[in-house]
Figure 1 (cartoon, one colour):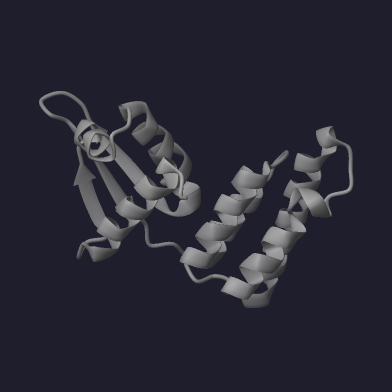
Figure 2: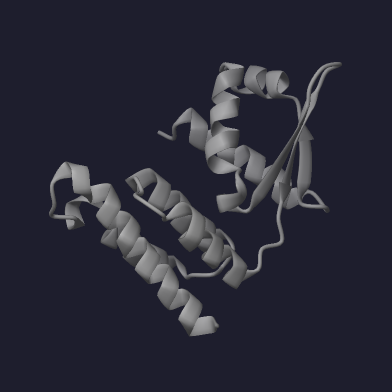
Length: 155
């Protein structure tokens, strides 16, 4: 069974895809009521799954029945890959962070489903035979190298 975070993410992405402008405005409290969860759960999904790394911009308006506007960005492949390499892969990367980056690459059709599965397998904990305190650093280095190859392939 899907986690509530996954359901909220899928729901919002469907709404964005169906909108002409690839942008939606939502009220956090209304969405929380719809999914029978707390507004903090909505915040968690927005912060972790709709940020620049995933190709989205969030604007927030507070007060007077405030809203949250989610816009899917038009992403240039090389700029996106360079940003991820320079800003997101400076130190280490958890498995879930790596999988979110890989999912964003697939969502923007920068990689195929098959390439995504290969990348996910390469950064999986089972593939990293190292002490726990080094796995995230190794995972980040592996993903950085793979993204560098993607830049060279197209650039």
